[in-house]
Image (cartoon, rainbow, N blue to C red; front, side, top):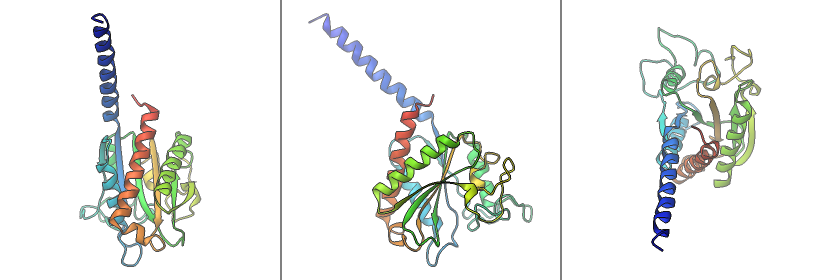
Length: 244
């Protein structure tokens, strides 16, 4: 029995050390969240407020990575700090009165953090669908993995709510506005463009319709439920990837 005790303690030490090592690896993962800063979407509805609440709920839930939020709302040093489209040149890449846009500011701040994962959170509008959509960047080097990540995130959100899972789409298919990726010359989301965003894994989520899904999106419980489902699935994906 005396010989068995040191062996047991050795196994216990190795188990604790392995757990600690995994914890350290997890803490090295940097995640940047970009809630919408749009306050002009929907009558008596603030997409910025809704998406920020979802992101805050996600960031507050364990496990905690190195997580940062980039948000331009209220920043008077940029233009379109609380309105604008993620697919319009005027609202993203244009310099107006010597100022960069709110989107450009957010992406500059995100890149400074050198994130492994970037997640933009938006609400949809005018779809008349109580649903959730995932978007990824066309022609991206990690397009297939980003599709998997986006699919998992929206599936988790749909399972936690009454939102319909409408699948993952390419940003080049939206037909919105005029911002184009310089690598493909296709319409794209500024926040997902690899020439703008240096994170290797980048997804944009459109969560709910600002009219049809209003009850869910404006409730404290609904926002918390969405944020926590999002965080849990992200954590599971990160654990499976076993990033160094």
